[in-house]
Image (cartoon, rainbow, N blue to C red; front, side, top):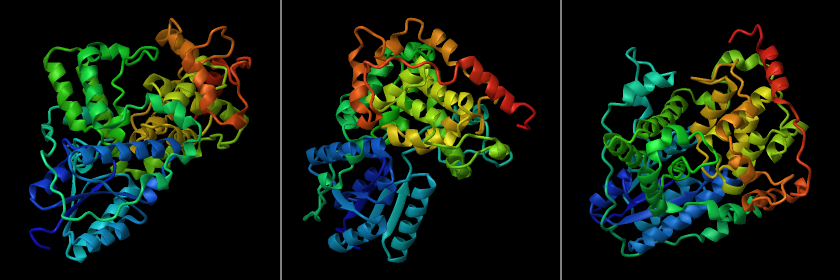
Length: 473
C-alpha cells in the first residue's frame, strides 16, 4: 500500500453522499476513492419489490456519483471474491463500508474484514445506518432492553452526531476498473407488470429524500401526532422508503426533528420516537436475531397457528379480497405504491394473525416480497408486535376490530374509496391501478362484486380469544 493506493468504498444500503462516515473517511485520506456496489447473495435474496427498488436506487446513485466526477463500479458475485478482484485490479490498499446488522450481512462482513486484514488490506466498518450502535445501549444491569419505553428514556437525551456534509470532491483514480451493466442484473424482473404501476409512487434518491424531509418538517410535523393515524391523509413523512436504502440518514432526520421540537412543533417528539422505534428494532435484532424467524416469546411456540401460506383465507388476504374494507384497502395500497400506511399495517397484521389465526411468518414473508421500504428489523418486530409473540407486543387479548378502526380513522371513507373499486360507479384511478399491478392469474376485475367477509370481525375476535384462553402468556 502506498500513498496513492486507492480506497474502495463498498456501498450497500447507504446510497448517499452526505452524512456518510465511510465515504468521508475515504476522501479524507487524500487517496483515490473507488465507489463499489456488489450484487451478491444478500441482495439477490431480496423479495421482488425491495430488490427492484434497490436496483433503482443503485442506478440513481451511480448518476449522482457521475455528476461529481466519480463512478460506481458494479460487480456481481461473492462479495469477498469481487472485492479481492478489485484490489488486484486497482492496487487498492483499503476497503471502507457502513455497518449492517442483520445476521446474514454480519456473517458476510465479518468474513470480508477478517480475510482482508489477514492479507494486509486495511478493512474498516463505520456507523451511519443507525444513531445508536445496538451494543452501546444497556440497562443499569448491563443487559439489553426488552421494552421500548425504557429504551427511549435511555437514548432520548443522548448526543447524536451532527450530520456530515457531502465531500466537496471525490478523488478519482488514474484509471477506472471495468464495471458490469446494471441492466444485465435484471433486478426488477420479478416485479413483472407491477413495476410500471409502482414506479410513479417512488421518491428516488438522496435529493428526493431531503426534499421529502423538508416538506414534512414544514407542513406536516406540527400535527403529526394525530395525522399519522389517518390513512386517507398525507400525514406521515414517507421516509421509510429512503431510510431503508440509506438515501437519507437517521442522524439527518433526528436533527431536523429536534429543530422542529425546539420551534414548538407539537408532533416533533412523536416523530423522534418513531425514529427510536426503528433503533429499538435493530437493538433487538442484534441481541436476539431469532426475532427474524422464531417467536421472540418462546411461550408462543405451542400456539396453534394456521401455517398454510396457500390456504383459501390467506390467499384472499393476499389478494385484498377479505371483505373487510380496511384490510383490503391497505393491501391494495401496497400493491400500487409499494408502501402501506402504518395504521393499515397494524390492521392487516392483526387480522391475519388473530382473526385468521395465521402464523405471523406468512405475513412477514409476504411483506418482504411486496414492500419497497422493506427493512429486516422493523418488518420482523412489527409482525411479532401485532401477533403478540414479540417484544413490547400488543397484548394477546387486544384484537383490533377492523370495522370500528375504519370508523375511527377513516370516517369519511377517503382511504377505502382511494383503493377499492368494486361496487363503485366511478372508481378512483388508484383503485383501478390495483388491477394493473397484481398477477394476471389472480383473474381479478373492477367489475367483480365486492366479497362478503371471509371472517367477520366479531366472529374472528371471539375465535381468537377462545384460542388464547387458559394459555400462559
